[in-house]
Image 1 (cartoon, rainbow, N blue to C red):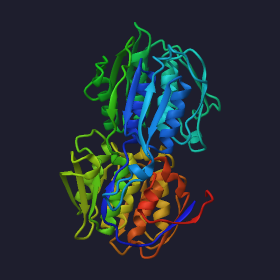
Image 2 (image 1 turned 60 degrees about the vertical axis):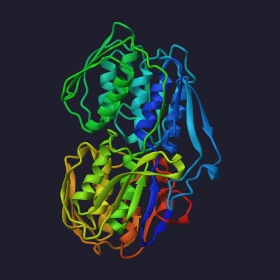
Image 3 (image 1 turned 180 degrees about the vertical axis):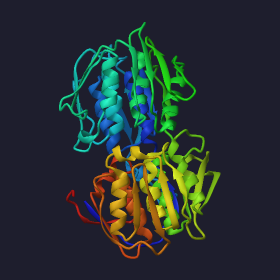
Length: 461
């Protein structure tokens, strides 16, 4: 789908979608649990639908509660996330595969998190699972995770022999000591979520010579700690030991807002000036992508947190964060190792800054849905923005608030690339057209409407 976004002011109040990372973790845990869990206000996106399908293949029974979107829509705010009416998921777990499986073929669509988490979880069963995904997923290597699973006695094979999907995975999980370099933290999170359910008496020991995205491991460990699941971890997360024989217990919990998604309306506020107030975020949430608000503050934006009362929460106090800019954006230097998904939004904001912005220590951004370092460098050049590409990041040579022209952008089927350039269009000299824009539904349904995008062609690029 190709869309056009013309320069225009952007201000008001935005309710952010709930967290994809939290929703997927809760779905996996609930599906492996012994009993019935309730996940309240989950994200409703294509990636989540892929995760639900995978969990059903594992034998979990998942029902959803919806109310008509027209009744659930947030009428009290000028700009809101698309409301699909999804209220909750009720999940009856498979008790660590003791209750059998649904079927043995899993298609994770475009969801990398679902891919890696299901690879490890499938190793708990004794039946062979075939796991695959879309074209992008079939180019994303899981070789280090496959090697670690094999070291734990699990059959874990890439059918193409290149470390990429499709895969065959079959337990049982026998335990052992393995080394797992984590270019993406999802490798380690996958094993941490599954290993406690290995047979009693097994020990899963993991040495981690490389770990990127540490906050996401803290998020996963918080899930274990909340249920009292035993584990040992070195303070620097270089070593873990998890005994088997545990059980995930059923739970009921709400899902908090998504800082990864919030980066894009916050980026739009920085570019267009704002003010934009974002609802649904918790400043104490361990999500690493809340670093984007610090980035904007260091670039010259005002970022103000406060508690307020809103009609849609029945007067319960919730946090709101307001982002606006009263002066020029300034360049800076930012280490994105803990939050590589911020690179597209940070690069888009940096294009409008005065001076250079250095995004570094983020080589793992090259192995996301796309090589985001190369893609942002190439696509910003189409808009007249010069960048210097480095192996571990890039330097954006910003031209100030008038330094970005319009043009045609290839979104490369990457939701974060598309959203970054949609935000950039708000203050470009002329409209920006973006191909493959439909992919924003992977994580942020309604974002194109938020940016007042005009659809030029419904056909996928």
